[in-house]
Length: 201
DNA sequence: CAAGAGATCATCT
DNA sequence: GATGATCTCTTGA
Picture (cartoon, rainbow, N blue to C red):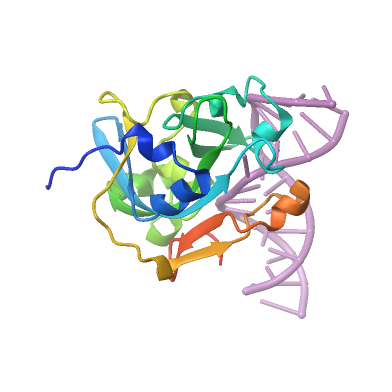
């Protein structure tokens, strides 16, 4: 195993759209139960600030959204539809509420364990969606507010030198935000072209 | 296959 | 009291 290192805070303090794009090809790692789950990020969405009507923080600072006002590099995890967890990484400067949603992964390590967590044998169905990948990786709300960039972080992102060329990055509309007015049509979803783990074409 | 319904709870009005 | 940054299962063509 080559030695990898966690991505540092300055990476997440760039413009949200930039972070969303640059996260493609990076590797999400979760250490839990004596196991190290990992997967390559193949799809993300940017929630770019208080003016973005799809961003939860467009409603202002509340108990749920205040984590987005922290400095980039902190996890924002919340429950949706009563049964799925969403994994987001907070971006940009302190007091500027924005984040990137990790929508899909290509599984790398602990695939057998993911099959158990997901109750399916189909590799393509393990992490091809943000509700799915949270289940597969055992990600829950206990990770909300935790840092992705400290040495003791159990959930973090590594660069393992997977190359993603600019012409392989597809821009698309975000999913499931029909309530967001003109913001529902902005091209703030990014995915790796032709990757089979992307959740929607 | 596509379309529709049901699951199930934290959050905000 | 309503509604989601979803997924799965069932139904019917």
